[in-house]
Length: 376
Image 1 (cartoon, rainbow, N blue to C red):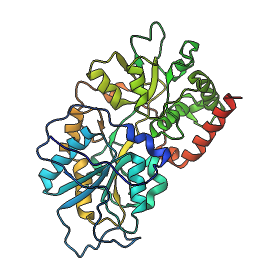
Image 2 (image 1 turned 120 degrees about the vertical axis):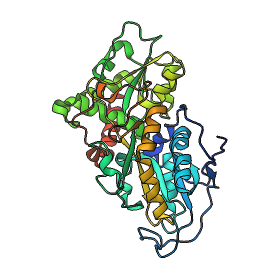
Image 3 (image 1 turned 45 degrees about the vertical axis):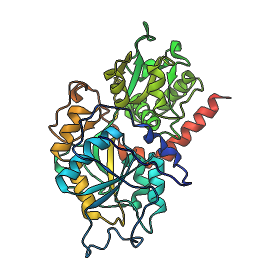
Image 4 (image 1 turned 60 degrees about the horizontal axis):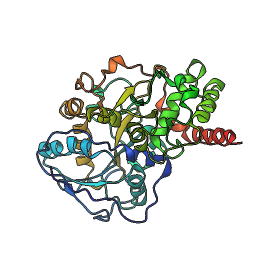
């Protein structure tokens, strides 16, 4: 499908801690969509909506239009949007950007929302911005896996992109890497690709996974957890990626031996013949549920609800599971042969997404302090 996606413009500063989610745009195979996705300029807005309203005036009949702000990959957009348009007759106007740019736009438009849906990040990243969104729990929610239901009423998990490690098979040699503990091997000093968790959401998720995995009795704030982080920081040796996508790219291109990242780009590199291997840490991976949100006061709330429902539908979830590198969260959906079966993955049994969201500032501040101490 031929499509040109307009980039967000304007002088909006990205929300730093969320900017890392924008890097989740690795190329993946997708089926030819059945019809074109419509486009809109970043500055386009229409009639006003009163600030503080959860929905637009329901007495007015909605247009067959949905305005979507998305930081998802082009492949995931293409997997969902054309099918939604075909099934509902609703025309989707898509505006793409980084998670930070999309969120900043929603924040700046609270008195007159231009968008209906924010498809970006997850509850961990967005919990502190809950007031920007409208409460809605889909009728499909009961069909989602345990642990991936809409618990807050605001954030609807649709797909998962778990934390993983990527290894360059041409460089690894005899070094064993099966979990986080192996990252402290002196032979890996300066050879670990890792982003800055204070600015990149993918790196923050990897940091949280390490804290849970290496903490005493799974306690991410235990001395054991942070002692491990001190040793890990020393082995990273002061080299931090500025963008989340740089981590898997630098490993695939042979600059680093191992990197901490998310699953989608690693699977993509493997499917395209790169000499890399995907490792789920034996201490336990975390599966953040990438969510979709309805914007508070949006002009097309009923259309937005239909979009959320469609994303959780068996049709949409099954297509993504069979063809893309994201993991669907609907019960009973099968994955394609290119994906490691979920039952073969050790998933953290103690990870608490709500806690990770509430303590994001505290954890990143502590990481900064530990990193600065390592430089003295």
